[in-house]
Length: 553
Image (cartoon, rainbow, N blue to C red; front, top):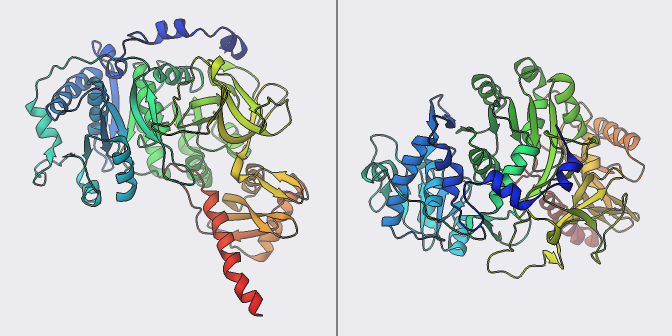
């Protein structure tokens, strides 16, 4: 195992490009990097499992031909290098063919998550100038409500015809020749068009340049610790950054097979697929891992000793989850931190040796200089909360060019500001405190919601928790917790008091939740991140509604 400090000190961009890419940073094609260069062997690219139990294996050689055929169709429809081609599909082989075909033409693949409604779709396709949308019958009706919708290609079940005016995906693939020369582009040219899932305002467009493939591969090797003999599964949907970057681009660029499960997450399906495909290297979100923990009696006998390495991204892991994987499943789960705009930049690395502090996000990924700064963009010492920032002038793998067509306050001088509050530790690792707008100020103290949530989840009754600052005239804010309980527990006043004392003993007198509300579920983004701002807005609305009544009394 390489030493992390040595990997950071010895990082060389030219050497990384030479060792990682088939092309050069001046002449790249994502389909070549993620498919064609591996197609002369008999290597498997995709293990696919349908929601009905059907399954299939696709080799790189098959995907080379299928992507060439669909790329020829796209070219007939006028798709040019730099144009956006959108996919609104579940995790199916057609999705992967669509992505690779767009890349083959030097076009830009744009993910549309299948849970999006018409307005979310309309904003994204209008902003990106999308030329064509590939979807399936389950999602097709949404496009009827999209103003100015581009032409539609529908992936039809065998024996069913596409509606008039639509193209039939597999029928068009069958009509096209099997050769299509890949179009080379510059490393600065985009190959993905992502949109942030921000808490306020419309989602912002994030063009991802081809040179980001270098960063994605580095993460797979050093942080995920992907080995040639691993069976790899990333639970994330390719409709979002973590899935598209690290369930598609990263493993395929390494010539490694990826795994698609078409159905929704369940404990049963997760255990079944890990068993069927002998998965040894797993990646996913804290939400998925909390659900596995909540079903520990079912999961432990099924997964104990099966997984070599497990990685988590999206929100910080709680210490209880980390301990459970180590003590009950005999494997190591590591926290990873990143953003749509960055990819993953702070990680506890499976393939690099460094200290691991329980609950810390880890150390910068080689090729990135990550610092903690204050509001004046001054770098802060250990133990002082501040904003996580990337020093782009000294981060050769930093690739974010800014939001397309938008001025942004994300950059201050050479620093990219993440908007997340963190602390630098004495050993050089970084601990996540919370989103800057999630930090609670109570009686002059600053409280990070993650610490309170972690303490709550350590109680056996609690499955999930979200903590916010509720406006308070005396304390500025008070700490309020929304708690989801396990099925055997009832949300009584006695349990609320017990949970308050549980947190108070573990943290401090000012950090425990003065209010606890038991709820059936927490609001989340489609990628599983807790939307604390919705809970804050709910509390503010409740207070405003109560004010006239109080005045009347």
